Image (cartoon, rainbow, N blue to C red; front, side):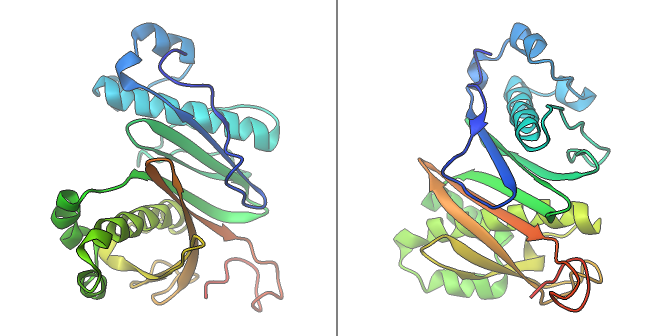
Length: 246
């Protein structure tokens, strides 16, 4: 695969019970021969897409296949569902992400985690931050952003955007309820990479408004990685089995 590196385990990202695999890729090197050798069946919409989108899709699925191999012992490629989300094996939850040069996949056994979500973003610049702040942030988040020095705002907006993407990737497959940037807010973040997000709408009985969900983030060279992993709580942890939002 000339356009994509061999997917490898991301050893610098350690989450108990989860496997994260990543690879760098160059869309400009994608060719019909690369597509054929990948063994990845492209959905009709991806077949009609530009080569850069095809490269993103293939690189993400290659990472997913390797992650599944590491987790369950055999590789398989999650197909694209009607909602365009990856369809994982029944015993596995997972998430795929990419930007223009890096793809990652995160998987876990459903006996350990109800859902996972992962996102990779290139850091926004000041112009992009100004353009996107109104779309990504809630009113309280915008007020908080304006209180920061100008040179810190793009970084916080990138972090907020990425964590909300990870949250959506975890909760949409679990609840079946679409939600948007204004329906969650970043309530806490720390220098050690810990964060918390708060839901502002009801998604399900288990995930009502005001639920708080933990997230993590860390820089990856010129990119920002974030992820959300929702563990399965056994009976007794909060009086019932299933998720235990706080």
